[in-house]
Amino acid sequence: MEFITEDFLLQNETASHLFKTYAVGQPIIDYHCHLSPKDIAEDRRFNDLFEIWLEGDHYKWRAMRANGVPEKYCTGDVSPYEKFQAWARTVPYTLRNPLYHWTHLELERHFGINELLDESSARRIWDAANDELRNGELTARGILTKFNVAIVCTTDDPTDSLEYHKRMAEAPFGTCIYPAFRPDRVLRMDNVASFRDYVHQLAQAANIHIARLSDLLDALDRRHAYFHENGCRLSDHGLEVCFADFPSEAEANAVFDKLQSGRTVNPSEATKLASYLLLFFGHLDAKRGWTKQLHLGALRNANNAMLPKLGRDTGFDSIGDWPQAEKLARYLSRLDEEGALPKLIIYNANPADNYAFATMIGNFQDGSVPGKLQFGSGWWFLDQKEAIEWQINALSNCGLLSHFVGMLTDSRSFMSYPRHEYFRRVLCNMIGREIESGELPDDEKLIGRMIKGICYRNAEAYFGLPAGQTVAPATTSSHR
Image (cartoon, rainbow, N blue to C red; front, side, top):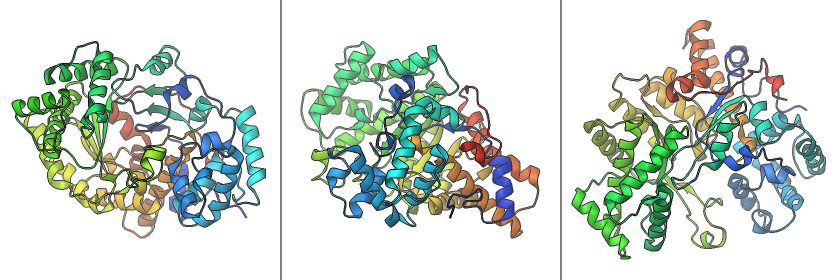
């Protein structure tokens, strides 16, 4: 029996019509992801389904561990096919987990495979997908073209040379690839040696000697300008909470001098310097007309035994429960007072913060840009059907859904682009249901305009990034 049908997640005729008429044909702006610029620049061809699908996917690793799969099949050195087999054995146990939807949607959209993945089908699916990967058009760039991706914004450290972005800018193809500025390493001061080493890397990248805090600020400004010259228009921070304990300039200098001398700083001192730097980054973004993104509330690296064995981003993170609103308000208010509040998107990891964030953005809208402050799409553990609906409902109830800039992948995998379709189906199903219940008007022009906006046009206008050539598919079948 076919699982991924044309009306997958679309529970009435109105929802189906809205999706097929106004959503599916829109290009994709993936304004926050972790794809490798090198893979795109070199148009990487993946050898097998493991490389493209399992190589760095900690969502799948978490599910496999929960299913009793030994670590060697997640991050160990067994063969790619053995790892795929272990994943195939796990998939039937992911029913009602979003991984079940994503797995089968991705297999169908990339390879035209609509067979349920389990241990008995693993070899057939492995062979069919691998044949397509080795001989078909599903290279890194081929996938971006297939899924009508107009813009990709990668996530890049200020010390990055951006050599691959430069290469792609000199020889463009259909998708425009831009860097995004993520300076979080300079905000980590718990390890003095690592902090000093990173400051040295910044000094080399900016071609400046860093002795004092003012030198560090000059180096960061130079790198920010360098990113701007290379097409960057977005920055990003992934923080537990927003830093908002603002010190005097003298206090900030004292903390930096202490670090540079090799002495450990206490948590209060580290927070003060991080707050000073985060405020500075807001000024840089405002000065150059960028959009700032704040990803708040993830509890990272919770398993202290596994961190030294496997490193970061290996599936040992969860939702944190820190109070968010007061510090976030203090940070935004300070930037606003100083005339330096840029366009800004805030994302929460904890669904308890939905209404806090949805109402927070309304405190700082200034009429200069529609939706200048955005409550970002469901992030990390919240990018599944239920939590997408929660985010849409909170934004709708407290702000203007019509100006929402929509979905992103936040992914390291080229297989993730059907997540945009997944989001669009959830959106259209919600709107279709409310039209049929009489909660929204059955006005196709009005509703269609909103759906097109959320799927693509709002992001296109908001970020102001020039897009490459896109060819919009007419129906769901053209994804195949």
